[in-house]
Image (cartoon, rainbow, N blue to C red):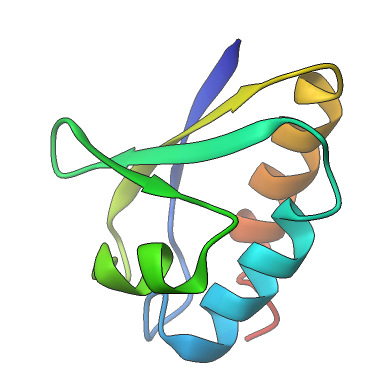
Length: 88
């Protein structure tokens, strides 16, 4: 298991379009990819509804957690995607 905290930078937070981009990227990996938000709440990064339900706003910090055979690459790539603004 690997994890890293990352701040959501895109101005509108994780609304439908960036949530879809995040989920599509997460689906490319075999690892289980989740994130913690607002304390101990956990969302599944491979589920658009789970990501939207987290109500992540711009400036919020989440902790990405990856577990599986490609966890290191998944964590690195998804952190880079989030820090780049998820296409916004």
